[in-house]
Length: 147
Ligand code: CA2
Image (cartoon, rainbow, N blue to C red; front, side, top):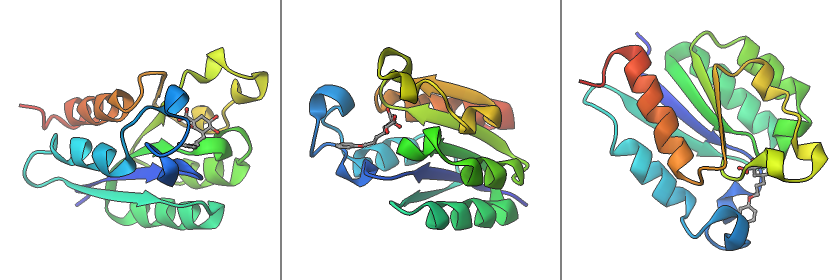
């Protein structure tokens, strides 16, 4: 049975809360994980993983095929470059929600295209860390575990 929501963050997001707060805010990745974990009912786990390496993210997406019911992913800059992450997500059967802290559409043109959006069931951009919580709430509703 798939009982785990995977929370994946890509390159440089380990610096969240430490650099460029005018774009990405003051909360850290630990704050994000705690906020997401606090929303989960009994019986659902959160597997939080951040990597600066494309292959490590892909390996974790593959692992999610075994026990994952959903993936919340902020692929960072790989959003705009990685066909390999798209391919890995295409091999995953659960819910996929793509999250961006910033509104990528208000930024440079190269950030407007996302390979991951070709697979994502939903895309959230520009809500800061609230976007992750919104993604989790949506998944819980989809799974029917929000009451
Ligand atoms: O808005 C987002 O969440 C992004 O995925 C963040 C990526 C960027 O390349 C995407 O276009 C949009 C960059 C993540 C860098 O994260 C940092 C966090 C704090 C300090 C420095 C970098």
